[in-house]
Amino acid sequence: MTYDDLRSRIEEIIDPGFNLPFKEVNGIKKLVVGPTGVAELEIYLKDRVKYEQQVKIQIIRLVKIELGFPGIKIDFFESEFVPKGQKAIKYLAVASGKGGVGKSTVAANLAAAMVREGKKVAIIDADIYGASIPYVLSLDVKPLKATADEKMIPLSKDGIEVISTEFFMPPEKPVMWRGPMLGKLLTHFFNGVQWQEGIDLIIIDLPPGTGDVALDIKTYVPLSKVIIVTTPHTNASSIAVKAGLGAQQLGHEVIGVVENMSYYYNTCNQKREFIFGSGGGEIVAKKLGTTLLGQVPIGQPQSGEYLYTGSEEAGKIYNSIAVKLIKELDL
Ligand SMILES: Nc1ncnc2c1ncn2[C@@H]1O[C@H](COP(=O)(O)OP(=O)(O)O)[C@@H](O)[C@H]1O
Ligand SMILES: [Mg+2]
Image (cartoon, rainbow, N blue to C red; front, side, top):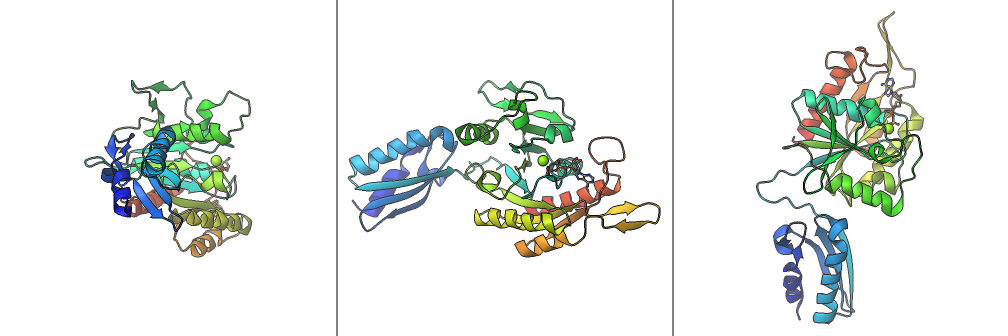
């Protein structure tokens, strides 16, 4: 049994999510046989959580029992393969390190700005500690409907589709999402939703923090890019740097920084007042080797609505950030 034989036998195994053999869906990312004969594998599987167990048994049976290898170690990841003729869904995660800096506000206003630019956009509200996208969008929360093949149909507001942990919480009761329950919920968010036809981008509102829960969306969406939101204050920016470095360590590309609550525009003297200090966004961008996409001033939407419109100052800034992101993400 040579290495090539082993490889070709594993390549014949079907990825049940695609119903195609691993060879055709680029399913084997790593296959090495160690000095003691133990085979080490990295398998990229569609709908990993659903099919991992079944495929694992199949591979172990083949490699250990049928082919007689003394041991096997397999790690599974979500597949990155896109079948011909299909468009890959692109993801952009919004991270901050610290809560209260305006991560959800930025996520929602960026989504709105992209819709103004003619893009089809959705938000996955994955902030398990404080889901706020439904509130930021003033979304009327109703029970979700499902398609015939049991995919959830997201709710929608102003052309922005939304799936939120908030939809699965009993009202006014805290729910601790953790462990397997959290994993299941997120799997449904990333694999079990019927988004609109031809969707261009899904923005992910991550929980605050610099650890695993916050940043390790890699097992769900391997190719998600990340933007970091910070305030100009050094306190927020130092934690934002940590969040960015954490994301980079996990293999996500950080494509920019948004500085929020950058200044207050004083209409009495037409001056910008830097209430929360200045320079935080620039520092974060520099330390992460990325660019500062924009600086959003302090203020509430003037229209009295929940989001900034494209004609007010902050809305124009969101538009310019959206245009940069559309270019960077090739939407
Ligand atoms: N540029 C801003 N000017 C004024 N208030 C803001 C601004 N950005 C966010 N806020 C407010 O700050 C609070 C926290 O924002 P939020 O988006 O919920 O932060 P996070 O998601 O990071 O916890 C909210 O009440 C929000 O309305
Ligand atoms: Mg939030």
